[in-house]
Image (cartoon, rainbow over all chains, first blue to last red; front, side, top):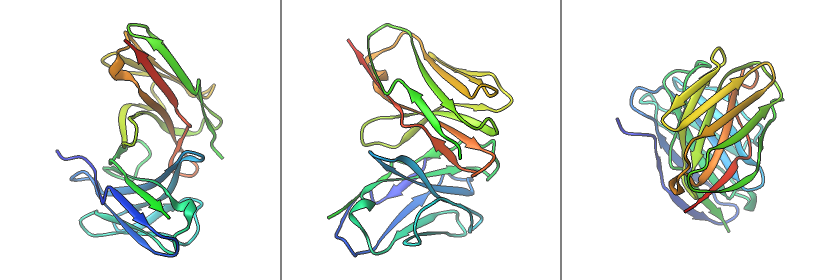
Length: 114
Length: 112
């Protein structure tokens, strides 16, 4: 079974632009979560989607948004990019949205904002 | 708010040694705890998942324990190898917040 895939793997943008990242979960998994990883803050939760609905959201500004499609694939959008948005963005999938599920992570998208 | 701490932040050991990585968390109301491995610039690889009702899990040379009441978990790596060099992350899935809360990780270097 294929793992979690993320595209693109690398992105370079300039301040003020917007960006869209994509995540395809493991086949049969219906929950997708997004995390931001920076050297200073470590891994921080952005949001989780299940059955096309946002179930949970972390403490990030409204510039960060996401959605999930009927095939469980998810996209994350960041508008009006700032230098501080440079990070590794990781997507995780799990089969359901219960508390006991193991989470599996993709390889990440490295975003650099210049 | 759940806080997860990992000690030590970095560790260097010679090949063949057994080692223990520590993780502590402040809120014992958790669903589960996961240990991950991250190689430089890569994503996270799940190593072990311990449900809140379990005390330990084993996979090959890895053994993880969980003491929910004291808010502690340990990852034991037996007979370490250079290929074990990576950052090891502990994460708890809390009843509140309903997301993984990560520690800052332990950077492990195993020298030949």
